Image (tube, rainbow, N blue to C red; front, side, top):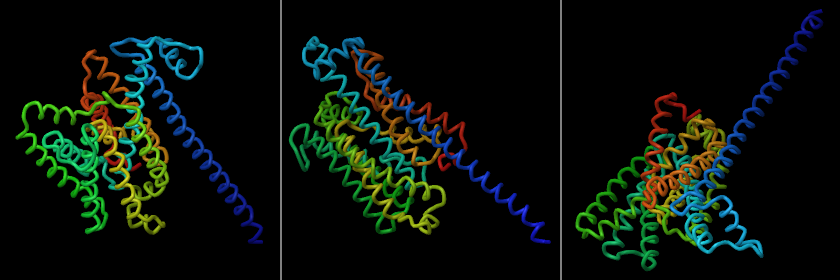
Length: 372
């Protein structure tokens, strides 16, 4: 008799559990679709901004002029004015593509660094990369002291090597104490001040013209970038980004529940942190060695993306790439058109665009939103 009474209750509970599971599945599907829609809208917005960028400038090109110049390179029988062809292929497109690639690299590196340190104020430049690269470039400009290359290549190579030297020192110090977030941040800040002091000493004794060259390098610009340089940066970014995406689940665990609990779930936190540190520094060093120091994107792009899509790194990482590219292309377009023919350094424009957004997010969201 008791079994007859309890059976309907058991059946009702089973139906309730099945219904709840179905609701959860629908909610998750809806959640994923919203995130994917954001990524698609971001790509569409990037294409629109890139189209505006390729047409805008001191030499105005219409949309028809751009299409004609593009078609002339690939379709037989289509001819474009030599001036339009030169402006598009030698000036506009290299800047835009470098902006996209550099924005992707700096933004995803910043997102990865914030994840492995569980600190929303961290960017790749926290490791002292920017100050070390500035020292390497300053030594070449002042004394010709470096390790590789000649002329402009010597500046690029030396800036890259000094940036990676800073990374290796931070990595070595963190290994001595264990690759904890606190050790990485403190070692990076100490080295940043150290290399900054050395750079200041070099600049203090530099002649006026040499000092101008040093300062100009630190501004950050896409002026004069070549297709070969774009290819190098794009190759580095293309090799590193898939590895970052592979660690998205591990980062979710490390950020949400901490290292100890994540280890209990099978996450090798030390390996994730070490690989992410080296690859983030490698991307950042590669980008700034060709463009100069552009630092704010790696800090603000992850926050903007996190504000829009949340803290799930499966969507946060690719979303940060899109937002970083939009910021870079948009800032470069504003910088070269707002007071044409004067071109403002992109690092200045990015700061003017990013600071208000950063402050708005900081003032309108909860303190721990970045972990959600």
